[in-house]
Length: 335
Image (cartoon, rainbow, N blue to C red; front, top):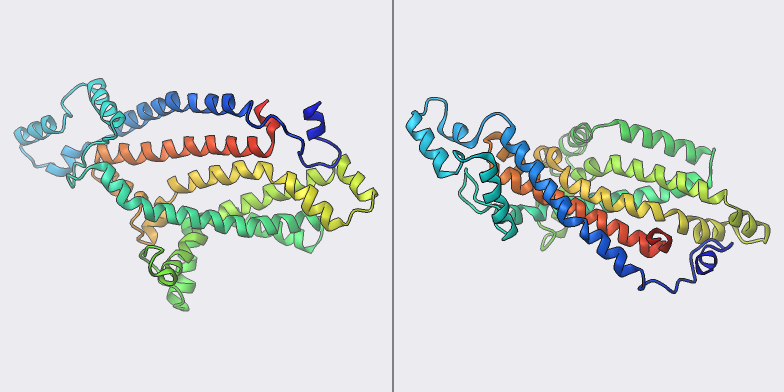
């Protein structure tokens, strides 16, 4: 009965008296999936980094290095041990919060990631906000004026945005706004504080380049879900009662259509954290993406494993957060 009343004819979910009763088991079940999933990620990350051709010893010592030097370096970094022994040592350190030491710089991997994580996080947040601010009004307007000029224009624009790789968009923006017009700096990164203006100027082109595809996907999702909602019986009932179209659209339609959007936005944010590699390289942003590229070039296993594991865990946590936010917005998810 409670569920029926919650899904009544006026659309929005209302009479929910069991927010806390079933939330704890729901949260516990999601957190219980974290440990085995993270363990699987560590195995995949470790195997992929070690099964790839080459190793840090070859990259550092060079092809002309004497065999004695190569053997000594392999022993120093533990690369002469069996693969399962190397994994056991590494996972034991990870559990204690130690991701090892970079072969190239000798710095702790956790320190290197923490120093560069701010730039990547700032870029991912700005791209997420950009996609939300553009996609929501565009998707709502396209659904409200289905078949009209706004809808057709939005569909053409999103199709074009989806078809353009982010590196191509970045190059076009650099040529137009950085080289020809000279409105924006073409490279570098500044923290948000204390120079907000300089930071935003340097983030503008990377943000658009990174967030444009996600903006197109999100606007299409909002439009599609809103059109489905607007065809429901309770929407027709509200219209037949004389409710203003604006109220029907925003209060009943948009409010319910945004539920699937929560999942996409949260998972997009996690994808952006792990997908900034090309954009960071193009705009010379010192984030974890560039750190990963530099580590791959010399086969710096500890850094490769540390960055990849960090991104993987963030994606898992983002997935859990998406489930929790959706369950708060729609308690039927927990059932």
